[in-house]
Amino acid sequence: MNDHRVAKLILNVPRERIHLFFSLLRHGFVVEIPVGCSIKTLLRNALGLDDNYVENRIKTIFLDAKAVDDIGTACINNRSVLALSGAMPGLAGATLRRGGPLASLRRSISCRSDGKNASGQDGHVTVKLYNLLVIDLGPILLEKGILIKKEQLLAFFRRQSEEFRLNLKSAYLNGQQISLDGWSEIKLPDMLLLAVKPNSRS
Image 1 (tube, rainbow, N blue to C red):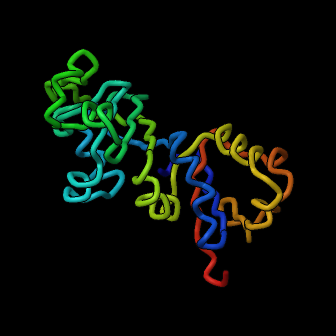
Image 2: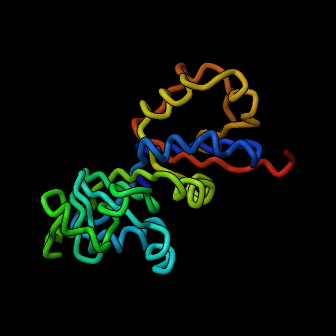
């Protein structure tokens, strides 16, 4: 993301505290994609997931509140919301599982696409991760950097305790070190590329 309206914020925290940022992944982060690309393309190219991981770990997928079976043909629109989950327990989990034997029971809420919704223009999709996927992918995605809205980040900081703030070792905004106090007073653009990196000395 090279847009001048996006600031890069790097936070250094102890490795064992990175999980405190996992809620950002559950609430949703933004991914820039070509409008009309398939979910499979997004998972591979934007998130860097290999086909083996996708097949074996991502068991439930919702695109705009519709369950998805075929990730190769389900196309993403601008401002779509993509929710990814590992296997969920019980009958509900079995019914919602992509490609599962009970998929026919949810036909009315399933996502269908003929794969022809391509426009080639750039757009944004909100990606949400749940259960085991957060544990698997959270540290990798956070260290690489996730694109989030300013309001989302500020709301996240407001929810944290003083202990959380003490675990922030340092912060850099566009390469310049900034104070860890008074987040609400720092001028930030509407979008930020947030990278949460483990502190090697912790």
